[in-house]
Image 1 (spheres, rainbow, N blue to C red):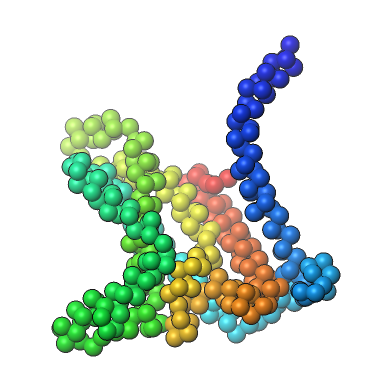
Image 2 (tube, rainbow, N blue to C red; image 1 turned 45 degrees about the vertical axis):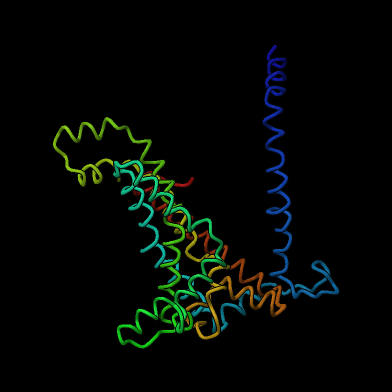
Length: 303
């Protein structure tokens, strides 16, 4: 009887399992099969010999990267960009979500939401191109304003000291609105009776935000913060690569762009793979450490 019931349940869920199949196949093909390429990090890869036929190198490529003169520069640039992003970008979606949640005018609220979401759907290439046009030393609107005040024009995109500011600033403009959706969803799940009770008790709007809104979305903030902390050594390749040039390498060259340059352009596939694995392992260790700290401090964790 029990077996018959299980068979019926299995047939009932067959449709759902079938819908799940394409996703499983996709992950297997593009996430698990490529893991075979990790072997490159431990071999001196040779085109004619293939991966298995190439001689073993052990940890040679890892030692080469750790003793590379560029090692500290790459790690410094990657860490600083991520730390600045954590300090300046991470709070912005939270602030924007709370401000939008407190707005009562429906039309104005939708208008601001739409305007803040739109940049997210622009490609990174378009964003960087737009930055180049606006910041052009000859015809860019920013430099035209500087010239009108008698100041000298600044070639922003070629100045190493401006790279981090432009990178973080454009990231805030591009993604803050879209990222706020997560926090808006968390705010909408808070029981409105709490706000009503606080209002009756005489709590101001700032007090309601402090004692109801922020604690209500606290678990969401912690989860997002943990995910962000786990990516302290990861940085999106595309934007950094499009914004950088040889004049700004001192502040713009990060691990991902270095891997591209030595791996795909330089043909050092084994070395580039070793650098990528080193970065990935450190990121995994970091997210594990921060997850344990969060679990002990707030009882909220990823696992």
